Amino acid sequence: MSKILTIGEILVEIVATNRGNGFREAVPLIGPFPSGAPAIFIDQVGKLGQDCAIISRVGDDDFGWVNINRLTEDGVDVSGIEIVPQGTTGSAFVRYREDGSRAFVFNIRHSACGEIELSDKTLTLIDTCTHMHVMGTALYAPSVVKSILTAVERIKAAGGTVSFDPNLRPEILDSPGMREALQTVLSVTDLFMPSGEELFLFAEAKTEKEAVAELLAKGIKAIVIKRGEKGSSYFDKTTQIDLEGYKVEEVDPTGAGDCFGATFVTFWLKGMHPAEALRYANASGARAVTKAGPMEGASTQAELDALIKAQGQA
Image (cartoon, rainbow, N blue to C red; front, side):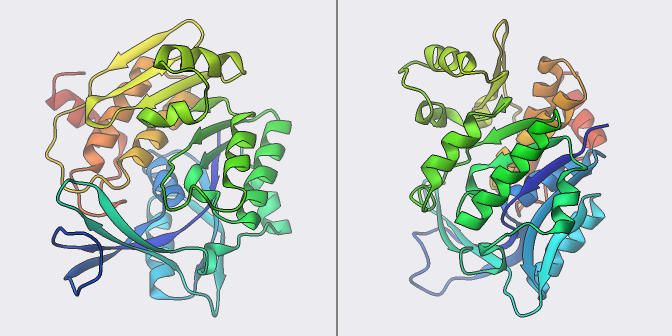
């Protein structure tokens, strides 16, 4: 039986209700919504009934507890979340621009999850896990990078597997050690899950076909490319699968890629055929955008089955 682990930021997201360019004026807000890419990912894994855990830190405040409560309700092992008595839980203020892009104000590095260090307790938790999922957003501080690389090393040494979603944002790409950490994780990755152009950050090739071949030649077992509303593609050394996305009304795209990734990883580890796992992942990403708040659209398998059936792709 697989147990999926991730390590990284837990925060709340607070969203402007009208569109515009940033926060240099007073704007109405909604939230807090539980968030953080690793937390969204692992929450979706839990919603699918898969054994899973997260290692992180939150403050002993309402923002921390809104996350712990949600993760617990959805079946995630939260024993690896350290509650810092005088700490402050991370936050992200988000405002959508008129073109659909987003402006963020983050408080991560100076929040409770700005430093995540492993203890005897969390090392023991790591050793109960068989798969490590790495989010690029989590490589934001030296102690977090060290914790992630330690977990990757231990899980791989025990015969486990690693998936990697670069999930890169301009705000964090130049964090100290970020680029080196990305390459280190890639070198031990079994399942690589870039979004669109992220593929070319890790390959010298200039076409998608050549970049995929280049990365598979380095030892990656499978690549899944997320294409948003256009669907997704799966590649291994003998197979290519392209599936269209689902047509839904978008309310909030935040977290859709994390839900997509969590769903594919969960079913891939269960041995589901890649085409079927990709179909479920597309449905998961689609459902996620129909709800306001990054975790609010996380889905059960029954909810995904209903969407697939409703759109005639069962």
